[in-house]
Image 1 (spheres, rainbow, N blue to C red):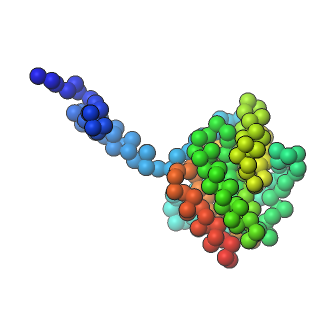
Image 2: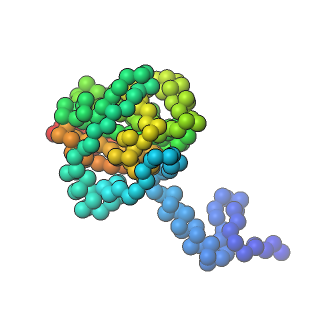
Image 3: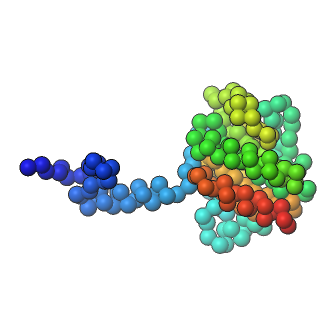
Length: 211
């Protein structure tokens, strides 16, 4: 007679067979985590800032309200092409999406083609996407090759010193997006990315452009 050991086991139909109450709890927790947005956490580099930041996606109404009214702080970074870009170059005239990412972050790479498409569709309407790489010394060389290989149309900024990260993404989440209105107020923050999020991102961009 075949018996099942205490714990969890995969059946031939790929269902999870569970015989231990503690395992049931663990499975429920795992399913909740799996349902949330997928993201990475960047390693903390010397001189970087790591602290809590209000107003991220999924926060309460008060946090979202504060996010919409908070004004932006300027920063200046160099692009992979050697140009210098400041946030203030665009705020006042354009809707700006700051996208924090890294080459070692799989959800970031999953989001890139979708962001590229959104940028191409709405660029002429006054939409700017500033893609801010959080890659450190060990991987920053891969940023240029990845951007060219993927034929990315938007500016790719390098932030090895965490200038923009310390202002807008101190938790160093990846991917992490901040949508800024023409008047400089922060409209939305989004932590992580999973398939289907591109629809919500584009809707937020379109709504911001209509203002």
